Image (cartoon, rainbow, N blue to C red; front, side, top):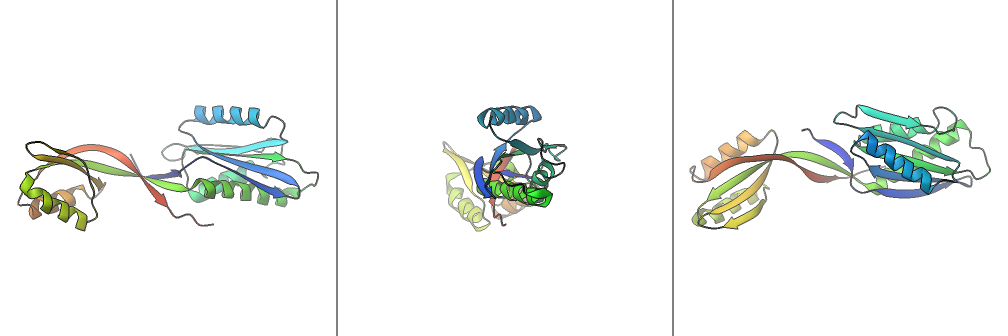
Amino acid sequence: MINYKTIINPSEVEIIEKKSRFIATVIPVATQEEAEQALQQLRKKYYNATHNCFAYQIGEKNQIQRCSDDGEPQGTAGKPILDILKGYGTQNTLICVTRYFGGTLLGTGGLVRAYSRAAKEGILAAGIKEKRVIQLYILNMSYSLLGKVQHLLAEKGYVLRNTTYLETVTCEVEVEVGHQEAFCKWLTENTNAEVLITEGELTYIDVPLDVYC
C-alpha cells in the first residue's frame, strides 16, 4: 500500500469554444474494465456528439494508461487530456471530453487548448484528495489513564476513535506509516508503559488537497 492522489467526487463541466460545446466528465475508476464500461455509458448518453475523446490512468503506479482522439486530428484531444491527468497526478481517474461541433474549425492548437481546458476544469470541479496509508493501533488502558492519554494524543494531533468503555477503556488511533515506532516509543514512555498498544490493520484515510489552476 502506498499513498496516492485521486479525485474526491465525479464531476461534469461544460465550456464553449467558438460555438463548440466541450463537456468534461470526470469519473473515479478502479480497473480498466470499469473505465471501459463507463465510456460505453457515456457514448450512449452522448450518442449524437461529434466526438467523445478520453484518457484514463489506473494502477498503483499508473501503469495502465490509455487515451483516444476519437476522430479528432492525432494528438489534439486524447493526449492533452492525459497530460492533465499526469500533471495533477490523479490515479484511477477517467476523463471523457465530449464535443458538439459548433460550425467553426479550431485548428490543432485551438483543439489542444480546448480539450486541455475542459479536462482541467473537470478536475478542479471534482477536487483532489490524497489516499494516505495509516497504521491503526488499538489502545487499552485503565479509566484513570484515559484523560492523560486523550491530552497527550490531542497535543500531537492524534484523534481517538471507536472508544469502548467496559472494565477498561479501548480505543483506536491512526498513525501515519513511517512513524509507527516513534509513536509507540513516545506513548509508552509518557504513560510509564501502562497502556497496552496492539497493532491493527493498515488502511487508507482521505486527505483533501488544495488544488490550484
